[in-house]
Length: 123
Image 1 (tube, one colour):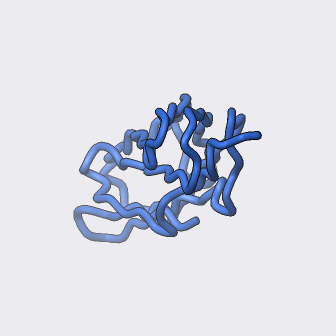
Image 2 (cartoon, rainbow, N blue to C red):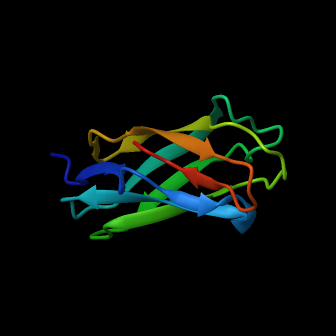
């Protein structure tokens, strides 16, 4: 029987200033006591890896009894005044665990005609 728990993004919304350089994404495990792994990746929406963020992928490893793991997505400060843009985040290929309801989420890049636009990531 699997005892890796259930994995999902930890928040409905993430926010960061565009000039902060990165956003940290947290994946939470509910239940589970055994080691588990999950792959993560980003894909373009209207925000593109050519100028808004850096394509990111990898594997998160949860040790026995570990409840959270994080990964960073580099954010590009292009100094352009743009409308809202989005890119996608997804979890896949779990080992020894199950997906929660929040295994995919959308990153909304919110910009306006002022310095320090924000990026928000609703699930």
